Length: 181
Ligand code: IMP
Ligand code: MG
Image (tube, rainbow, N blue to C red):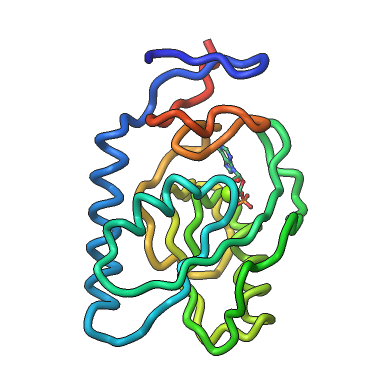
């Protein structure tokens, strides 16, 4: 599909599924290299709802044991960040003394990930690493290190592969960008 319509907006093709999957292969290989043989069983933390697809695709490529948990956060309304991070529902498990790999769909300003890492250390995680499918490097303004980044994109609003515009668009296999024409 070349263009999709969600609510009042039109989006055009941006990153095809094959490129997304290749990027996930590459990031999974890096994580495998860091964890294989260490005996560490990290918590893989899916940040709902956006990273459902990414977490599934990433997880099936991991070749060491992981403990899957999730948390639900939100900060976006329409096509822009509200500036405050809301915890819609808490951690589904106990991270005390555990190493956590946060799996995010996208890091934009970094507000969400920064708040989440603080929540995890406050919940007594021993170590927190971040894996994000997408990063908007021009928008990111936090000191926090992003350990694994699958793809970098310009500062445009996108949907698909888990990402939504006001609730719609998450089910598309490709990533689409807002069509401003
Ligand atoms: P941040 O807190 O500014 O880094 O924004 C991160 C969160 O905003 C992500 O977890 C997404 O839920 C959402 N978000 C940021 N950029 C986009 C986008 O281009 N499309 C859809 N959601 C986005
Ligand atoms: Mg998200």
